[in-house]
Amino acid sequence: MELQIDPIACDGAGLCAELLPEHITLDEWGYPIVELRQVTAETRRHAHRAVTLCPKLALHLSRQA
Image (cartoon, rainbow, N blue to C red; front, side):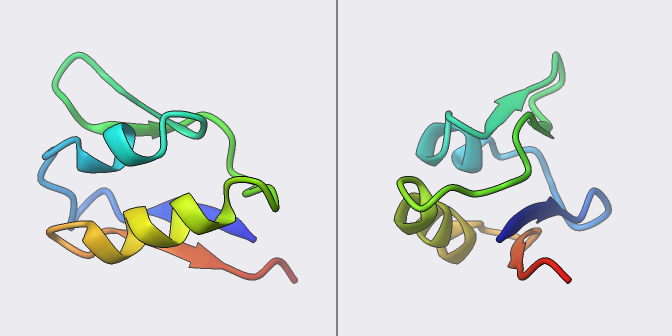
């Protein structure tokens, strides 16, 4: 699975980086930067939780083609 962020929808709340620090860091303005797009089996549960709790629904998980 691949982690994606919609930069237009994101308001920089930073919750995703708190819930998924293995994959996401924040820039100097508080907006997420996806460091590691491929979600591993070990972090998949945390990734789903971060997607579900995103206040702007800007975080997505998609299956790779």
